[in-house]
Length: 229
Image 1 (cartoon, one colour):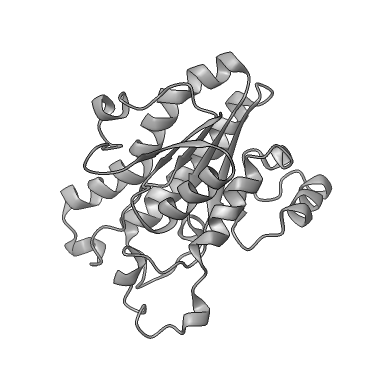
Image 2 (image 1 turned 135 degrees about the horizontal axis):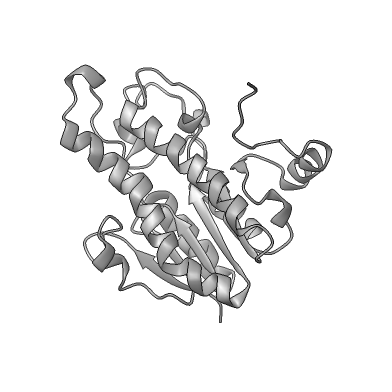
């Protein structure tokens, strides 16, 4: 039975992803506090290394205060969870994936990585997600051709314990929120082997993956971080 590790699996999007992968035939290892702290290398070392799928979903928003008044320690806690956590978990399983010539790393990202959303996303969260997108892109280039596929997935606006702290959460209509199962279903599709051409790219949960593949075929730079200089 293939093995999947899902961080942040105790609730919200991570829980939905873990459930969808289990239905899809995976032996799912859910990693979350307090048993597994993705910021701690010793804690990450307790996870299995022979993994077919790693979903880096653990994340926090941090303080919702202007950067000028933010607590530097709290600021770095966001970076540590959202970026260092994903990097540590990926580093833990990647050597075995490379040795076996197969594996999927799905980094749960956010449109905050590429889109300013003043007043709703903290600076630390946006910075951590932008860095995570660059991590995905750079790593994808490094492992290209090895059989290991790395993808960013943005679940869109999903009402969870974390997003319920948004200042506009109470005023948003129910139709403004996407179900966590949408992102979960996309993960299952992405790791099934039919969409490997999306390697290194930023996928949004509402995307039609077949249409996105066609777009990438027409424009190899589509959904990649880039800057024309």
